[in-house]
Image 1 (tube, rainbow, N blue to C red):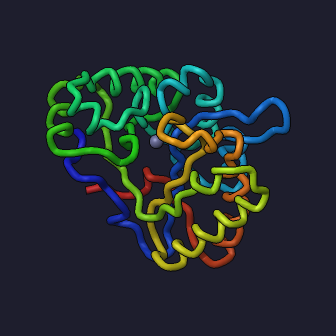
Image 2 (cartoon, rainbow, N blue to C red):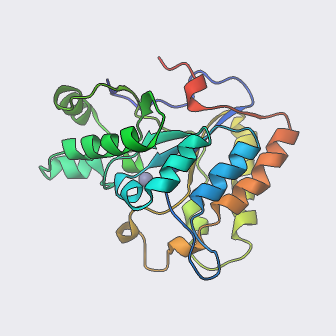
Length: 238
Ligand SMILES: [Zn+2]
């Protein structure tokens, strides 16, 4: 059953962090090795003994099923981020059928992950009570759903990927670290790819994604300062 309100960091202790990555899976460009690196990111975190959650979009799981499977094999959680990544509130208000946004993505997660429960995050965090009631009523599933899962630490990583800037990872890491040191615990939102190019000005390009580089800058530093990274499955949700 989905909750009416978004779950944030409720039961985390001081210096506990959960890493979540939205909008993948994605792959780098063939030339230059730039852009989304979902698999490399999952491998790096695995090597660091960190379990992260990748809130994947069904249409990209269809494109990169092997990556999805490998991310799950590496012990990460594959989260549900709908089938096509619409703003559910706008979609619902426009009279669209929401259920395929749940069923198709679920089928893919079922096929390519080891998940027993499914963590759900609506695109752009858009959710309301009427959508919740409708989905709880009409979406037939055997899975235990948890969510919507929100976040409380978001320095807007995607804004740093707006242009070719080889210092963007350092700037982005600095912004996240500042927030993390202020909040001291929580669910961190980052993006390992880009789902809706139409929502972004044309200057935003997947190819500028530096999420892996950013993570490589912040993880060792935070570990050194006594922060612990825990999987969403280690949080007791009410
Ligand atoms: Zn998203």
